[in-house]
Length: 467
Ligand code: ARG
Image 1 (cartoon, rainbow, N blue to C red):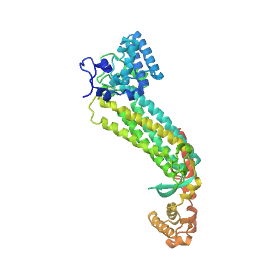
Image 2 (image 1 turned 180 degrees about the vertical axis):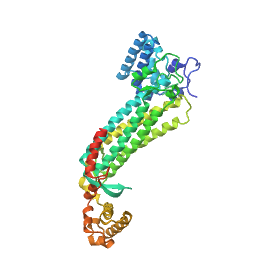
Image 3 (image 1 turned 60 degrees about the horizontal axis):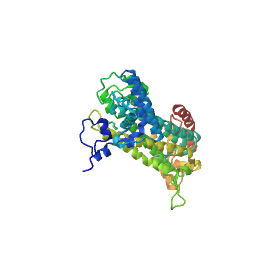
Image 4 (image 1 turned 135 degrees about the vertical axis):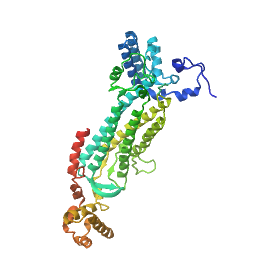
């Protein structure tokens, strides 16, 4: 058995019909103030909007309204100055602020909670916080796209090997490769913007779950807080955490994208590849191996993906099977989102730094672009185009030419035309015009293709679409 206290601070707020004290463990399991204090500003803003509406509707007197508004400003100033004493016994940010308000202004403070509940209050606060988080994240993502687009612009004609299965596939341009991430992040921004649009409805006025008998005006509070409209159903308003789940889902996909780019940074900066050198600013040394330059920041962007996905899964499991309306389980919605947003902000910004800083080794990329018979498709395409060979047959012929080159230990274009003709007599010397990696990328002019001219257009389009 643990200690049983006399009636505590929170019970003073809601414990009229309670006789016994609380177990000390209740405070430990119940208090959310250690984390929900993060949306103190949203809580004050929500209270101000609620109070102004109550006054306008004649539910509160002007005098009480003035006292509450001024009191809330003082509370806000105390919190921002670090002078506010957060009390775990007061459970959460809502009761902490209301209790301090009442200390400051007396009875008027006790009138603020008319026609609302912590259930609609927390839903409102958290929506406001999430909305601001999405807006911040969108700004960081835009900056990452800008960094990628700038590098893509500079490297529209830089030839590198393109891979499938991490095996050399066909030459591509580095700019094209980077623009792939610009597209991915563009969709991430779209998903977050979508989530933002759906979350921008106001739960305030749903009260505990059923609405209220007071003549409130929910449109007023919705508008004052920048929401598009009040939520339509009071039970949904206090029960819905889709907005957190959607944000986390979009965040998890974003984190997955970042982890792929991070992995490429790790691979590209490895000695075997040597395509890029990450800057001192984003690498670390080893305490024992003096030569080391470890891509820690990239590895952590890759690694932190796990916790963002974990946050999504954690809240999905929490929400699963919850009956309507509010249940305290839902207090578990906050820490996963806070952690995910913090993680995404730092990983996106670190990635932006790495992209902007990395030194690109164009010679090395070019040298590797032709390794591994990456021009084999160009030979097959030439057979189709110049010799009228059906593609499937051209594929087989090219495979045999590759086998011959492998046997000789040389590149395709290092074979003689006689060697090639020994495989298929339709091959002529003209084939050498298409076998260089530069020609290869230049030829891929189809829409969305890797040809430098296409990449330059894509850079311009991406600037217009995203920046
Ligand atoms: N701290 C609570 C939460 O975050 C606020 C809502 C509490 N509502 C209640 N009926 N106990 O969910």
